[in-house]
Amino acid sequence: MSGDPIHAELDKRAEAVERQVIEWRHHLHQNPELSNREVNTAELITDHLTSLNLDEVRTGISGHGVVGVLRGGRPGDRVVALRADIDALPVKEDSGESFASTVVDQDYPGGPFPVAHACGHDGHTAMLLGAATVLAGVREQLPGTVLFVFQPAEEGAPAGESSGAKQMIDEGACHDPAPTMAFGMHLGPLPSGYIGYRVGNQFGASSMIKIVLTGQQVHGSTPWMGVDPMPAAGAITVGVGQLYRQVSAFDPITVTIGHIEDVGRFNIVPGTVTLWGTIRCSVEEDMADIQKRLTTLAEQTAAAYNCTAEVDYLQDVPAVHNLKKWTDAVLPTLKSVVGAKKVFETPPTLGYDDVSEFVNKYGGVYLMLGAQDGELTDEGTLVPTPGGRGLVPNHNPRFYVNDDALVQGVRLHCNVAYGHLNGTITPAE
Image 1: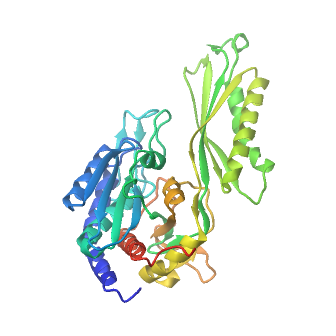
Image 2: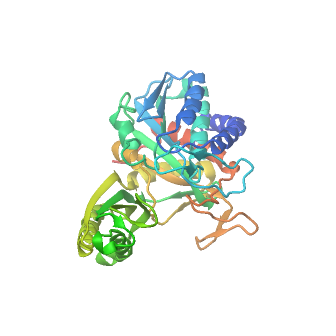
């Protein structure tokens, strides 16, 4: 870190707010809300940002999105957008935490669903609230503007609804002033306080699948008098497992059917069956090809069973792509904050995150911040800490976050923000 005394002040203020950040996270964890239903979460965020006397607090963006605007007291035309996602998942929690969620959303489409922050968004929100507190406290020393972007529906709005990063941008969340850098991080199964980064695709491209198979409803005792779409659904579900053999093995893809629904009962051949799923591509350009192949598979398989198939692709999300020039610019700051030995390059993943909309439009970097009981061996292999809670992937019912990682997230937000505003973190042309 440079000799600028503000870095020590940022770290001191981050330590001072750590207990509050942990309390926020525990509260959010116990009170999770699903995508497009983040009413109380948004209210908590809005109330705290308002208490900081920011220049502006924008609400109701893309549903329940909130943006705080902090204009620094020193001259500067750079603008950094710090982003956190705020929604939870339809997962029944099994983390063993004393503050584990017992929430059930009775009214959510397709539900009722148990609800849990099984992806760390509670931590993301709490860390950014902490960063807003710290940076508001040094506003007179900031040469530019900080946008605190709290985004709803990162996990995807229910089918037929819209929200998320792209809609926030389209609704003008960051138009005035426009960011010159976007930054964020995702808590996950890396050793607590370690940073995983990747030049290129940090996360893959994603698309939601909806396949409606139509047959002819009839009583289950006389299937020959109707057309049963259920065998076609089974054949398509099995068939998608072979799509990977039709594309290069060096560019991973996966196609998953995660939910099958019909309208009827045990003794009725349904008139329609709907398959829901997702496509993930490590190379974004492969998405159109996979969609075309899946459409062909669905339509022709349905025809083989005398059914029809209507295939739609919803909620396309581009890959999170970290450009080398941005990664090179931010790495010195990351190493200064957590230590050079705790910053390492990670392999690609087929997970997705629509923070890509911000990074693609404004430039910047998205990282993984470790928050679990793990170690990095001398060979660069991740292993669980003996006697610890293990390395548990996101979306798993046992997913957990160590509270001691949160202050590192606050420090990273603050130091990266200041580094960009003062010109330290800018890509080489």
